[in-house]
Image (cartoon, rainbow, N blue to C red; front, side):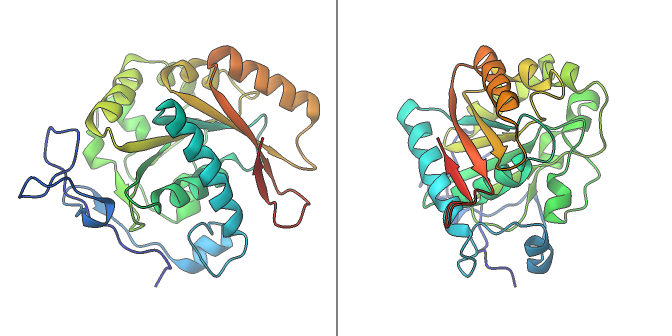
Amino acid sequence: MDPYSKAIERARQGQGQEFSAEGRALMPTDIVYTQTRCVDLYPGWLKQHRIIAGDAQNEASKAYKVLRTQVSQRMRQHGWRTLGVTSPQQGEGKTLTAINLSISLALEKNQTVLLVDANLSQPSIHTYLGIDVDLGLREHLLEGAPVQKILVHPKIQGLIILPGSVPLTTSSEALSSRPMLQLVQELKRRYPMRWVIFDLPPVLVSDDVLAFAPYIDAMLLVAEEGRTLRPELSRAAELVKSSNQNLIGTVLNNSMERNSMYGMS
């Protein structure tokens, strides 16, 4: 069995906070998912795809705890609840960072996280986690598929996934559309105690991030040591700041320093 404990959730329909039948506010460990699809994750698949946050036996998971603490402190300091994760180019570890960070945050006491695959042109969170999906964010935005039919609980305490499905060529138009704005607003209204993490496309590959960044509270930029070029990182940071002033930091992925696989500056 995977190393993560199961969470339980029951949401009182139409309310922003989750409550028990007695009216007591529910904690993440109280919650039971009745409408959200629950799936099992397989430890071998997660390890193969470097999903290691929450695995106490993996030394690298400590780096994600450090990143989690840095991110949560800055988010709470400003009262932010929505965070976008991007990178300058493809293959620099942004999706891996978004997943492991979301898991690590969700495992904090009294914290829940919704991870949204907003990389509409190349969705991959479900692949990293080994989840089969028929409906995703694309179907909600273009076809009006209800969000409750899309959400997935991967049986990791406090974590919900809003996955992607098939690639969408008109991704920037979809991300800046009224349905997307309404979705972000609804997620913030309905779940006031939940952090929402958006895995976004690389900022230098398309205009998707520039179109979507104004909708959310803050951004996190991921770079990979030995791969990301300094001019690209500088340009990406400039673009992110121009569209969303709240760039909370830059994550250095695969740092050569011992015990520093991730560090946020």
